[in-house]
Length: 490
Ligand code: PMP
Image (cartoon, rainbow, N blue to C red; front, side, top):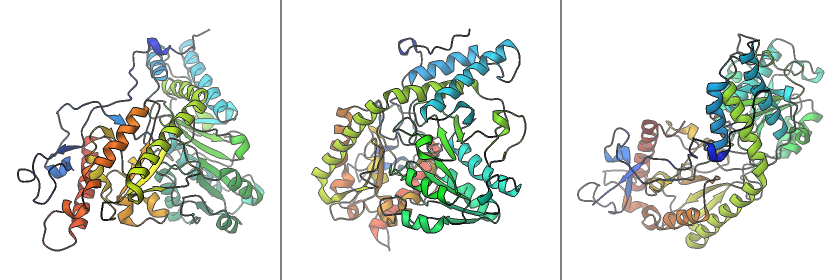
């Protein structure tokens, strides 16, 4: 029998990755020397605005990551397993020989672990490169099945209407937009201001729809959708339901059995597993479901995902999700307490100059979305705020927005004005974050120059236009440039 037992944490050679290096901005020593006149001397400007054009070689202090909605560090035990199997179980899991069978056993063990975490059957799990691919496979795969006229369910035949939410991840919205170009009808169901779907509006739209794609939890505001109600309503109308579960896996209970979904997308790196691996869960398995392949080649993964499976990464995913499930309750409670502490501290010190976004009673416990206002009550520039918090890795929008100057589509979809979206920070706490660090974050945010000074004092003295507007516009340009250059966002 091959040894499938994970390497223990103490023997793991791979670091926790909870802290990293890097610097997103530099402190301006004096307004006269470096900054435009009028800017307070203690304001840090984003690096590109300060004239830096490539990543700083200067060493910096360890930073505290408050951006665990973008990704999580690989659990040391899972990382050690991946590393070990890269050497020991490198063979193609489809190969019939002994080495291939060893790799295949690791894949099948992980299939059981992932299935167990979501109350599914192992044969219902199709490994993919992550939730992006799983979302594409579910959405484009159902459409491909329709186009082949192979949709097995009688009420689904001939249907070409797709329903989704405006706050979905781009890996849901983009394939759906592609299907709109190919002649499918697409509707974004009305949202409540807290980001939860309006169930009455959904009820009105379900008749004759083919597929509802609805996320379990949002990656910017943490809002949880009423998946059980939505899927029950959809089932009454014969509508297939796909749930993007990337953010909820390993964080809160997620049972496909209880939720009565048809498809669910999973990602390893959001739950302390390796990057570049995930899965699509398909009710009843690929051979029985109304889904057709969208990539072609070998017959791996029930014919739905050709390509040699990455056995070491798959095994790391399996172990990470098992470990996350075991500690889920403890982690959720601890991080929920810390998140509430951060919010309460900020609210106590800033009053109405900080606003919480999302569904406060229906949120991921480790997530918060905060909009900040300067002493004059104007939405401030959250990128300037981040640049002035050099100890912390934080982000103002989802990582997938890096490179675009547009405000977050999630915040816009819940009705937030552009300026307020630009004034919004998302915080994702994680396993390595301690209470003292949360307290320090609150302290630093409250004391940061953008919160202490009016935005108009930050403004560059240019002719024409609202100076505060110019300052903000400048930062949105430089923020994205900095992120792309630093490679800090996937
Ligand atoms: N869906 C959601 C809700 C996400 O947060 C992410 C990651 N940002 C994805 C899908 C894509 O996951 P992956 O990085 O595994 O492709």
